[in-house]
Image (tube, rainbow, N blue to C red; front, side, top):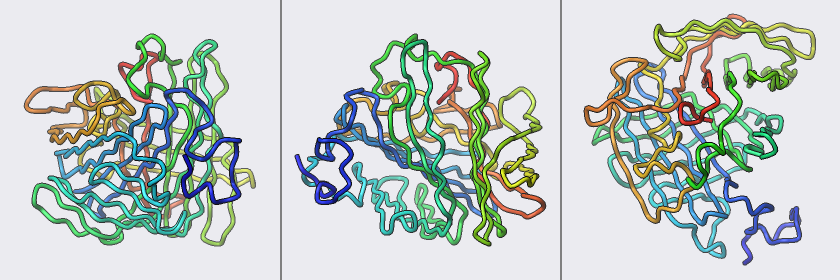
Length: 364
């Protein structure tokens, strides 16, 4: 089966583009987005993934509005590869269109209690992360690449009949692909137990520049994963070579309340980053399908046919999440933040995730 990309001179294997290079059922290809209103009352999180070896695709659009989280999740079988418009990812009413690679994308959801048309624009260089590879004994449980960008959103979104104009909201995006733990809902849980670890991931921008830094420390002594690049508006950049941090948590939770980072760069400079959450509550990732979300409990990439799900979480505080009056496991929690970088104010997507070795407790 041929698709439009087969007309290019960029093949990487002897197969057509529609055939992925591994038969592993966990192979995925995914866009991810977030956006933040200046007043912090509203934020959104969205994404869409394609799982060619499972014959399915799914998407989510979640809106945080004060202390409520509105969750839309959709899924559908794969389209006929021969009919694919390679510029657009589509799952039911949810679409992502690449208008100009690495510069302009449009996100739409055309119907339901959460509808939207939003354009992401950026002039920031995307950051290609160092390759992620993680083993459990002799088994590969994660092998993927990801790139990240910061930018601005414009357009509108509608939540239960309330239309919200989006004008120059801060946002970020990533695009990841490869093999990821717990895709497809097929594996016994003992097969995806992971080494306990602690992850910091920060994608940010200020008027002075932008950057990404991340760290993952492992309890078993595996060398620390450290990655990042800091860019200035003067078109200079330097790699992050070391990271120290101090984190204050909301009492009784694993949700951070304040953070301070000291970055050491490859050009000899040191950079001080301070951050505080800007939304009323942290995002609960299960609403998007993470942590074996979806009502069937199978998570991303499971074969479930044509599905549309909508629910609303009540978030009374930084720890508890309720659905229809019943407290639920929210999955991992993520924060959008206001920051300063050497005193310059800006915005960031800043998840900080302690992770147990048992993936029933925390997300990837």
